[in-house]
Picture: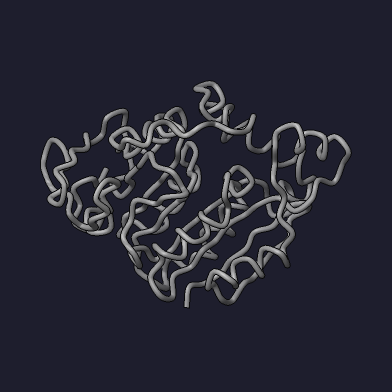
Amino acid sequence: MPYRDPAFLAVLRCPRCQATGAFEGARALTCGGCGLEVAVGKGGFIDLLDVTSVGEPPAATAEQRFMESELVARLYERFWRPTFVRLLAGKGAGGGIGGVAGEVFVHRHSLGLDERKGPWLDLSCGPGLFTRALAAAAPGAVVIGLDISRAMLEVAARRAAGYANVALIRADAHALPFGDGALGGVNNAGALHAYDDPEQVFREIHRVLRPGGVYVGSTFAEAPTLLGRWTARAAGIRRFDPPELRAWLSRIGFHEFEELRLGGAFVFRARRP
């Protein structure tokens, strides 16, 4: 994994002093600005939450607490995610474009990996399904998987062990550890509903994208069944109306909003001008 790759170190921002491109070192990464030392590869990922004085962020919703479960992390790709999506978004979300493989295809091609340079960020990557797909599609670029869950990242590290261009980071989506204009694109599949402050996450994504960079995400719009609506309320699932999301992103500075409806869910793309 490319934790000492100059292309990775150049975009990494110190969570303590906010210096970008200041990390260097061999066994550990040390910030040249403030001396912060970060262990490399501990558990298969870099933990930037563990080295700050902020403390552990609270797992505010039932779903967030589930994401810290080692069992859920192991079962997430094959069982948890497909079942959850089908329940909350109906058959059109899972079967209309060929299931999970079809969703990955849409996200991967919406980013336009062949049209611009990385690095690429898979935000809230979970066990790394999309991270691995992006890494395979862009073998010459660094692909960064970022999540707040240790359990998810440990599974992601095991499953991405054969990918030389994947770096994994534990950090908070509300405070991305990258410099301004550092990334070519951000993938954000099925995680908006779990954020405490989506607007702050949108602002962070806009900040770390370079001009022309693309933000591709997917989220839930409406539950098609009574059971789905009850489950969403019980789990604290936030829903997004596409026109409202378009206006929200536009206010922040994104342009060229596009969407593809998939049952009660949708995939969207927006660009930083």
